[in-house]
Amino acid sequence: MASPAENTDAHRHRDGAALLILRLGLSWFLFVWAVNKIIEPGQYVRIWGYFHGIDIGANLPYFMGSAQILICVLAALGLWRFWSYGLLFIMHLVTVIVIFQSLIAPFVIEDNFPVNRNASIALAALAGFAALWLLRHRDHWSLDEWLAKRRSSSGN
Image (cartoon, rainbow, N blue to C red; front, side, top):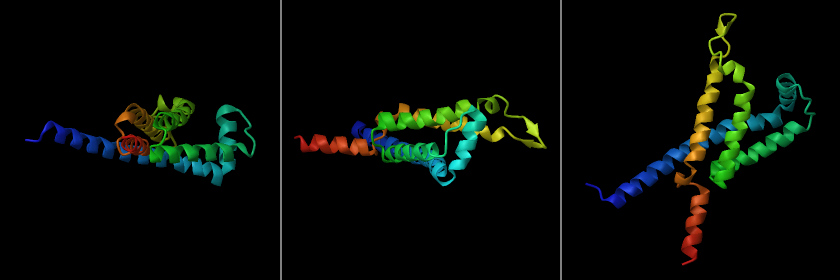
C-alpha cells in the first residue's frame, strides 16, 4: 500500500499532466484562430461587420491577432496563470456569445445539412477554458509553478 506522501506525489503528477494537456490543447485551439487574423485579416473585418455591424478597419485584426497570440503563448507556458487562463476564457466567451443563436438551435437543417451542429463544440471548449482557470492552482507543470519553486529554493 502506498504511503500518503506517495499518493500526494502521484496526484500532483497526474494533475500536472492532465492540466498540461488541457492547457496546451486549449492554447493551440485559440492560437490557430489568432494566427488566422494575421494571415487573413480581411475575414475578420467581414466577420465583425456581419456579426456586430462594426467596421474595425484593416489594421485591428493584426493588433487583435498579435495580442491573442501573446496570450496563447503565455497560457501554453503556464505563465501568469490567473490572467492568461482567464483571458483565454474571455476570448472564447466572446465567440460563444456571438454564436449564441446557433447554440440554442443545434438541429436546424438547411440544404439537408445540420448547419448549427458544429457550434456545440464551442460550449465544450468553453467548459475546458473554465476548468483550466478553476484548476490553475493545481497546474504543477506550469512555468509559474517552476519559477515559484526556484524562488523558494534560492531563498533558503
